[in-house]
Image (cartoon, rainbow, N blue to C red; front, side, top):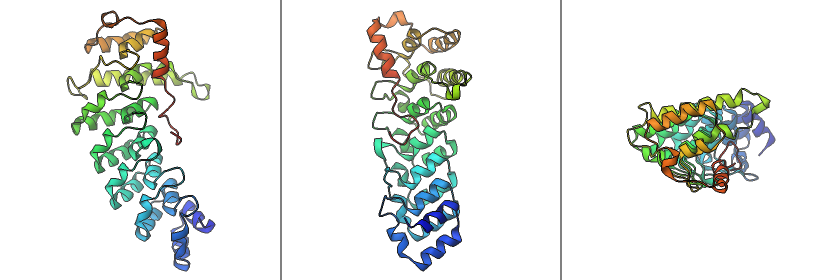
Length: 295
């Protein structure tokens, strides 16, 4: 991309951008030849709404271009939480929200990973069917919310599932056979503190309790919609995952919520060998589908 054009888009100088295009209209047609990065990608990333509008007026087809990382302008705007830009891009074509990137991720997946609740609402408004899309590893938006500790996004998504009669997503399993509930109860055991802040795991534990409480005790999920005794590929239910990790005082609260919801006691299900348990721990803690552009 022409350096002057890039700079105008980066700083949000609409006047310079339009002057450059007026003086040399060919800049718009050659800007994406090197790495697929268009002026619309840059404006969408930085969040310059007026530049996004001008780009859409001049070359609406830029909205469908993928850069060298396989990202569209909508992917980028969604991940960065630029809700007005998301709205503008969706005006061109609401089906843009279903465009898949590497690992089969759509814009809703990126918004969920980053916890962009306002963007999530706009994307679902554009296409309610987007909530059923899964990644290449079988992860739903609920799996992504759990893996990236986005409780508010999770709560909003669950409400949308009920509203649009898509609660079957609650029971979808990833490629390891884990539902979001398996991930929720296991999350506090595989956290690496950020910046060595000892409080960080405690905050994540609180989210774990909130998730279990939300889907099993409150009326956010329709009665009977959630299969609480579902097994993953290692033969573990959510309660068994909780049982076989190191016990903590807070575990009792989560176990009690699960049991009140009808989950059978561990001894009523089936026995586990130690090797099986170790395999299960690995399966529940995949490194994929977390907050990175490379998955």
